[in-house]
Image (cartoon, rainbow, N blue to C red; front, side):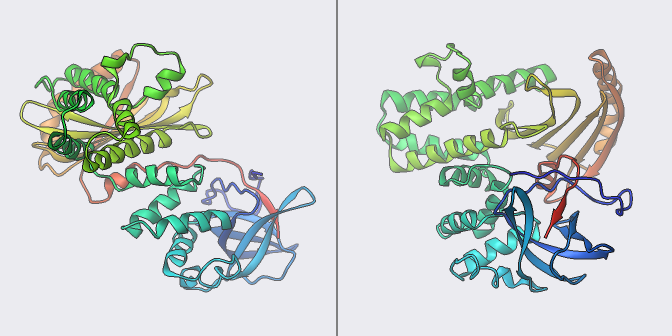
Length: 412
């Protein structure tokens, strides 16, 4: 059962209040920020605030563990216990959830609590068990937080999202697969895969905008990023000789073909593609589309990471009047480059972050043509800003934005 926010007359305008959607059984750590008359309090969890009617004595400034429960058809907050100021990785909460005290479960509860992400006992039990088999705990914890955005809590989803989160470039994965296939028996299936990998690594050598657009379109099709969606809509263009990479890899895994190294590499690519598709599933009012595409130029190969985010129209498409597009590329001369384009009512603002010195002066001669090109398609360029590329900038830029909503009064 989900809850939506109601008006909070005692909260000043401009307060950082965002959507806080609960389901029954979820647990979270919250602080009593302020007490008001009539036994009302302002509770803050993970930077989000909401009002609640107090039915048990609580103290301002203290942290508590709460659980959402359904009482007589109404969702309420049940106070489980007081939370340690340092929280000790949720150590006090684990016995109440009848979960083992080890480092894995404590780290998981602490990681989610610090980010204000609610969870259920069943989620913690399942994810904690999978985390024990993950070589990189930090990677696993980031995946666990991502799963709480509404994804099914299954081991398959966890594996796909973890492969996506660990962020191994797709061209490296393809090179690994190619080497493993070349070392094994050359069957018709492996030869077909090798031929497709070579096509994915090929380019026309041109760096014009139109050439790049055509290459991206071709690579999307050959990778099979939307292969299943095409099948669902009756797309019959992909015959046996034209199957995309993902379909061929799934076939290889199902038949147990190739060497173990080849199957492991194939599985990692499939999981990465699955992770991208999971993150592109429609969710609420905002639609996200994620892609990582290998690009080839005359003497240089790289990856393009692309994210589209925007309001979803009734037909399911992203509203091109209000959206955000992010490109991340590691280019031969500009090195790591991040381009963020925001569109608000068809007014475009662009920010370019790069390690290349003097980029602003180098780009300036091309800005009039950019402005004219956007104008011909009905868009207005408002400004282009430049900045130095910072570590972690890609992860921060590609984080999924929140959707504003109304608040909720909860009874504890």
